[in-house]
View (cartoon, rainbow, N blue to C red):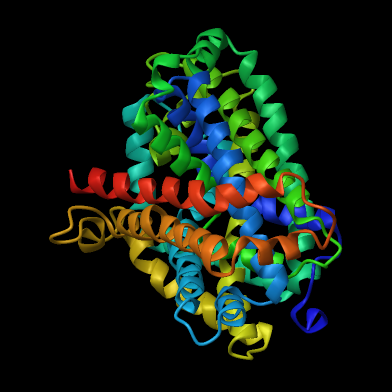
Length: 453
């Protein structure tokens, strides 16, 4: 079965592929701002606790489920609990892969255009000018749709090469390049005039916020989403691993790389941002990346090169994530439906592109999709709420309940100990049974309350 489905050729290849799945646009534009708003270094402390005591155990659990069954998310739950409805948890992950990719590919396409804009100096002026430029850009329907198609085309071409020849080869190329660019940009940012103020804002601890329940919820939510948990990606990648692999150690490597990228992104965003007069440290999301930072790149010494490098880094982060997003439903069609990889990739790419069209048009190109009647938001924002804010935590909650109480910890540990004795097995069992589901349930409740007003 491993030969038919494919498998990772090396442990290093798996770690980079899994880290690539975790490292994405959210690491660059989401994490730094939440650190600044949540108490600086105090937020980082809370974030690290969430990562290692809640998110890492879930990642280990997903990898154990995947390797034990050698199946896609739906097939994995069917193997471990046949004849029950637990397969729906895997189905949610498969749907989330398509749903997230449909809008994520749109944003990834923007980074391609901004590589060109940064190289040619097309984006200049104050925030109003760069904001107008961005608005006109995302409102260009043919361009936005074309860039989305390009991202999906690159993703599909990668998956056609299989696990070892496609996914592993691509991530082993892109991830080292991403990390090198990230490091160079951080060095450049901390040497800019005004960098000291940015570093102080980013790293100055406000310990009064450590016990703020909303800060904890924000940190846990960011950690959970950053590590690609709850959508079946780690179940899928785990199914491609050999029995000799130490799952816990590999998972920790992925967690460390993802966390290091997020922390380093803050060393770029805030020192660079504070060197710009009038910088709003509460800026986040597309506004930060495509409106605020281009102002900086246009005025700083060597800004053209720095701007190009920054958007190339963003593109690499996006592509390594789109690969895993498409591989989840692809593995399902191969395993559970018996499709050939080529057919599965072609069909899923076509479906995802069709679903992506409203998101590509929902930023000014179409009045209907830019502000959905009765919803009060654009189609892209709605998709982000449905899949990122709710589908992923629900999937993670169900996964922790399943491993902790249905499949049971002792059975999971049999798999985890296959590649070598797992350190801290008793602690992991306690966390996955009680702490993880309680914490994720809290995310779901607070997210719903915030949405309702």
